[in-house]
Length: 581
Image (cartoon, rainbow, N blue to C red):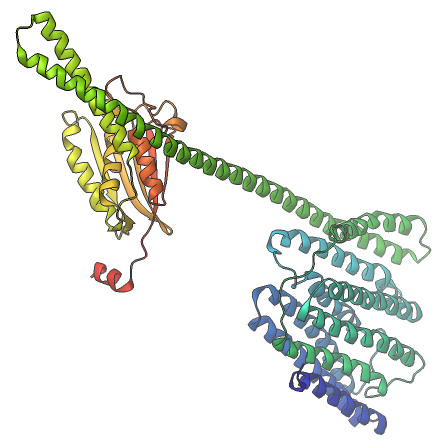
């Protein structure tokens, strides 16, 4: 690492050294108190500003981390500002106990939350609610412990010795908890995040040890603002500030080594233990607590309130767990349906490809004897001299041979489908042409065809003839289905859907007997002689060749619905502007 990348830590060391020299050489005085109090407040505000700036400029996964850290320093700054007010404005020593001791105690809570948030781990959104609620339960339990243990000696019946003992003990546990989180985070992170966690861990360890020495000095009356006991505090603040500034040169990637699954269950189990401890503490207060009656009543009320609050969090956690399970089931079902549809499409494509090869060979073989039958029948008919019965039979032979020839022609057409040349085409124009061509198919106006095309409907890349024949086939099938339906109607809707174009053919006919088989070759519900069952199979092949999708289903209110989707063409901006003009 180049020396320039150490510049913030070198500056931090210089600040600590300067403060240490002043503390060592100066004697206790109002000027030293003012210097120390203001210096510490400025350092805390600077750290808060740097972390708040990081929360604004850094990537989204990091923002919660830096925002929580800056909030922790804001609470710390508020406590320091109260010291300035007491010592510099009112010229009084800090009272013991002091109301802002609560602010000092809880300034570590957002920092613990920031570390527990684990911004270095990716894919957090799916477990955001559960992790947050588990942590809120633990923080609520920690606040309850403070009220349960410390408040009776601070506000109910003042006992300075017990207050300081319990306050210092809980504060030490709180610092130790933060250090444990930082240590675990450093062990399970990589690259820049590990470096950041290690710097915060070292700074936090220095503060924890230094605060214990400061508390002992205060008990024996040796502490004063600006003394050497404040050096660890200043060192902690400027160290964390330097690390927060240096992250701009570090790689804070969100890739981290996988954590043992058992560790992932630690936080929920700890939250469960915290919840179960409440009735135990309530029973201890009611049966074994030897404190004054007012303190016992206060503790019982605190336990009751904590049980209500944490119980609500447990309810919310269960609710979010249920929602996560439901969402997982929906995603599993959707994935299964997508996989089933893709499998069906693959089978259909393979079926069409295999059938095309078979049909091509069979059609050629059938065509030769069929041509001979047609030629000989026509020659026999041309000779004349046949009886009426013979002429009738010969006409039937010719008609059936002609029908067979048309069937063979359809088979060859189906088997010889090729991708064809594609260009930028207007589907709206093709739909208009298709509906106009089939006007004659309407039975004396009994069938109504409505065409609705969204303004600005985009174009697609495709083969004009193939798509036109596909639309003709779908519309003809709909008209055939509506032939015997009074008030039959076919509605064609063309609209854009994201990056795709969607065309819907919806009729109010009797529907389709088996929508799952409608694209199978030779499947038809038409009478013998009216259909080969190859039309919609050919349409399916055309749509697949255009990277599109086609689905068929029966509508709940009756009738069939065909939905075609194609990728919309990405037209150049110049062409799009010209089209709008």
